[in-house]
Structures are given as C-alpha cells and as structure tokens.
Image 1 (tube, rainbow, N blue to C red):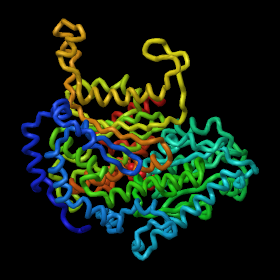
Image 2: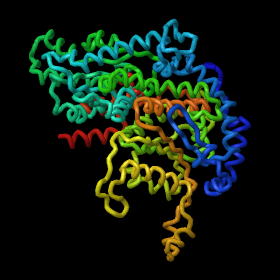
Image 3: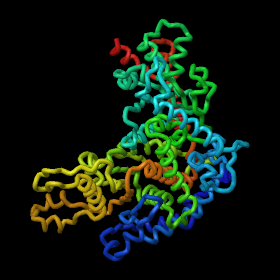
Image 4: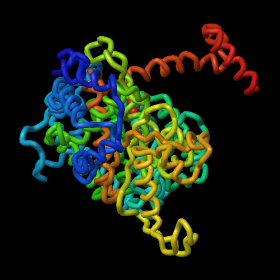
Length: 573
Ligand code: F6P
C-alpha cells in the first residue's frame, strides 16, 4: 500500500461515467425533489451525533454510484485501514500517520481493537495514554491552584505560543468550548511573528499569574521561538528580574513556562525543564495534532472529563469511517461529493458556514487542515497529478456571512458548494421579550430565529426563485425581474448536531479530517506532508539580513524585492 503507485482515478470506470454525466449535466433540485418524495430521507445519513443531509447536493443515484465506484477503485477503505494500522503512508517524510491513535480509548475501556498498535517497536497506545495522563495531571494542578507562579500566586491566564497546527486547533477548540472553561481561567493565543500580536495579548497580563505554553512540534519554527523569547523577556522584565542572576531567572522560567513538542532536547536547550514538557510523535502531523498534547492549553481550561469527551467524539467518527459501508459512510460521501464538484463541475472553492458563533474559528482551522493537506501538484509516487486537487476552503459564521458574501454564492456565476453546520440546543437560551411586533414576536426564542436563517439559506440556494415567482410578487419591470431571480441548484450539505459539546466538536473535526483523507486518496496525493511551506521559510531567512540593513544581502535580491526593501527602509526611517 505505502509504496504502490496511486491509481489514476481518471482511468476508472466510475470516473469515465461521471465524465459522461457531467458533459450534459443540468441540475434540477426542484424537479428531483418533486419526483422523489423520499429524496431527503434517502440522502440523509447519521455519523455518531451528526445528522448530515446531502439531499440539497447536486447528486443523483447514478452520480453517487459512480462516485462510490471511484472510491472503491482507488482504494479509499484500504488506505484508511493502512493509515490506522501505522503503515508509513506519509511517504515523502517516511512516516506513519496515526492521529487516530491519539483518541483510541485505553484498552481497559474495552473499545481498542484487539491488535496492539506498534510503530518501530513503540507501543503507541501506551505512549499516548502515558502522555495524556501527564497532561491531565499538570492541568489539574493548574486548575486547582496547586501549581503556582514563582511568587506563589495561582495561574489565571494561560498563553499558548504556537503557529499553524500548534495554534489554529487549540484556539478554535478553546473558542468553541468557552461554556466549558473553568471560571477564573482564561487562555490566550499568540501566533504571529508581528510583535503586535504578543504585545496585545500580554499588555494587560499580570506576570505572576501567567503561564506560557510553547507549543511547537519541531521546536524550530521561527515565529514560535521568537515569540517564546519575547515572552521570556517580558516575564523577566515584568517580574523585575532583568538584572537578576541566572538562577533566579531560571526559577521564574520553570514556574511560568511549559512546552509541547516532539523535540524535547530543544525544549531543554530553551531552558524549560523537560519535566514540564509534554511530548508527541512524528506520526502526528501539525494540522492533525489538536487532540495531542498540543491541546494542553485547552485541557487546562476545560478539564480532563471534558477533554476525554472531546477525544471520544473523534473516536466515534474514526470508528464510523472504519466500519460504515461506503454507501453510508459520511466522510467518504462528503469527500466524494467534493470530488464531483471540483473535478467535474468546476468548483474551485468551498464555503464552511457554521451557524453557531462558538465555531467562529472553525473555517480558519479547516483552511490549514484542508489546504495544507491537499494543495499538492504531485502524487505520492512523485508523478504529476492527473486532476485538479485541493479546494479553497473559506467561511464565516452565519448569519454574519449572509450580510457579507452570500450574495456571490446565491447569484454569482461561480459554483460554491457550502457546508452549513449547526446545533439544536443553544448554550444560552435567550428570548426576545419585547420583539419588534413584526418580524420578531414578543417572547421569540432567538436561537430558533437564528436557525430559521440556517434552514432558509440552504433552501434558497437549492430552489432559488423563478422569474414567474418574482412576477407573482408584483414585480413588473423585466429588468428588475431578472435581478431578483435566483437560479437555485447551488449545492449545500447541512450538518445538524444536538449540542456543541466537547464530543460533538471532536466529531466535527474528525469528519473533516476523513473528508480530506478521502479526497487525497482519490487524487493520489500525500495529504500529510507540507513541502510547499518550506520555500517561503527559507527565503525569509535569506532576506532577513537585507531587511536588517546588510548591503551585500540587499544587493543579492531581485530588483523588485530590492526596491521594496529599500522603500521599507526609507519609510521606516
Ligand atoms: O506551516 C508549516 C507547519 O509545519 C505546519 O504544518 C505546522 O502546523 C506549523 O508549521 C507549525 O510547526 P511547529 O509546530 O513545528 O512549530
């Protein structure tokens, strides 16, 4: 599996069939729903707590069968099995890909598959749970106040310093699970090397009650290490230790800095006690690491029990992905639909529209997960891809997006598949006691009003509004009729969960991880490396001396870069 050449998806019978269907494709969601009263039920699937309605997608039985054939012929299920068994499917880095092992329950909890999971002789389950226990123990000390800063005060603010997968996951989960955060504790997240970020996040903090978590898989990332040094400097300055001796400074770092990394030697070199470092492994990709020790800031904020529920949510979807037949396998079906839209109907981007404010960072999180994973132009054997790959993921929570970019989705010329995500039970049930007497009646439950928008948007996208319907409303000017007509047939998927619990959040993340996996497998790409990020990193190091005034380095630049740097230096003064 790991060294076999990817199947060319375009050579499969399913793909050829889809080519034929796409050639004369004329979607008709109104007609399809009219002709089949069971359409909604037929295309609604369940994965753990997630109810997923694909019926407003541009899909028919014929299309679905052909897509499923592509999944079978490209070996999606077999590759998933290879992944969770620890095969080194990340071939360009020669690594296993085992984020699913991060959430396997302890053997004593009964659900672990009988076969022990080992990678290079390492007992993966034992190591995962030993680290989890260490994180839980530390988190409990901070939460209870047993862990204090160097002056004996309990910790009130945890500042996670990381970037990419060492930031986007923790910040998204922290924001999503705010109702579960222990009162009196706050987490903040510093990621950008722009000094404005760390300045703003620390300006009002008390150093005596602040704990920094330096989160970096490699412990070599320029942004994170620079920010970690700035944070250490801030701590010493604000504690009045700038001119103190090394031991005093070291004591302060020991009580106010911990680290999460796979490179524990580098953590020690930074001055953080390895006792206060939480490890993970090279078989966890950065963008797949939110459920590893990288989530320590969130474990501190929400506590062990909630974190266990979070992991259980991931695992429930992992099990669904492993065991559900392809025909009912939600991540596979969603991945296949994305392939249909991308490779046959010309979609280039994909909107993610959470109708829960707590998921406001979910689209940003998914951008790394999806685009760093599947933005590739060669396949896992080094050959060029044979199809378009990747989708541009983007989005904002509803209803805010409705008043910003939905216009383009509804009436623009581009096909933009959209995922609508919501939960039935709000964290805060508020009623509008007075209402406005027109659109909003006194006592109206505001969450229901919110969800009315969720239901209305996918309905409008699917069914649109015909010219006759516009005329029937009294519009007579044909120019206005045209402007007010909606073609419909804009595909969307609706995902509904009971409540935004830690478990449901874990389920949602795992769902998208496996959608990415499905698409990556069909495209034949290694979704677990990220070489495309390297060139920019290398060049930043090469350009840095020029920006810092080194004439030779400046002369070595191309004329555009040289002129821009010169202008920058002039403006900076
Ligand atoms: O952007 C490239 C990348 O390697 C991501 O994959 C990763 O999540 C991020 O940088 C941060 O890396 P690290 O955790 O090693 O600091």
